[in-house]
View 1 (tube, one colour):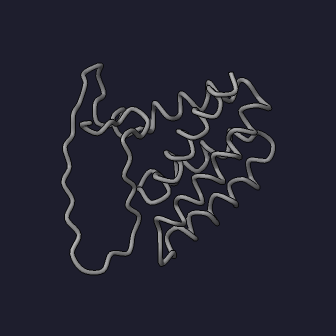
View 2 (cartoon, helix red, strand yellow):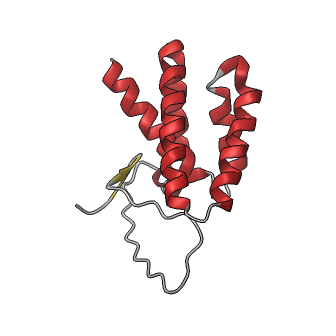
View 3 (cartoon, rainbow, N blue to C red):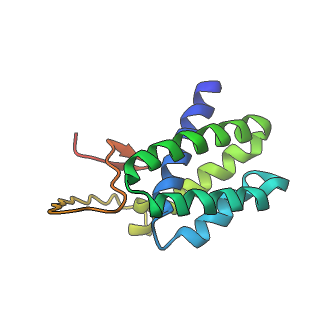
Length: 138
C-alpha cells in the first residue's frame, strides 16, 4: 500500500506543478488544497507561493523539480493520514489530465508534439515518459 501511495503522490505532484503554469491553475489550486482538509487555506497560500517562485525563476526546471519533491512529500503524508483523499486525488488527476480534457468520450487520443526553442528561454519545460495518462511514444 505504501508504494501505491508514493506513486499516487508523485503523479499528483507532477500534475500539480505542471498545472501551476496553465490556465487551469485557478481551478486546480482549490481542488488540490482541499485534499489537505482543514489546513486547505494555509496550503492554498503555500501553493500560491510555489507558483510565484516557479514563474519568477531564472531556472524554472530546477524550481519545478524542487516543487515536485516538496508537494510529493506533502501529498504522501496527506494520503497516509486520510485514506479517502487517495480516491479524491485519483478523480482529480483523471479530470485535470490533458488526455481527459482532449477526449470527452472513451476514445484514445494520441498527440505528437515537436518543440524547437531558439535563443533565450524563460519558462517551464517538463519532459517525461509518462505524466498521468499521457505517454510518450517509447
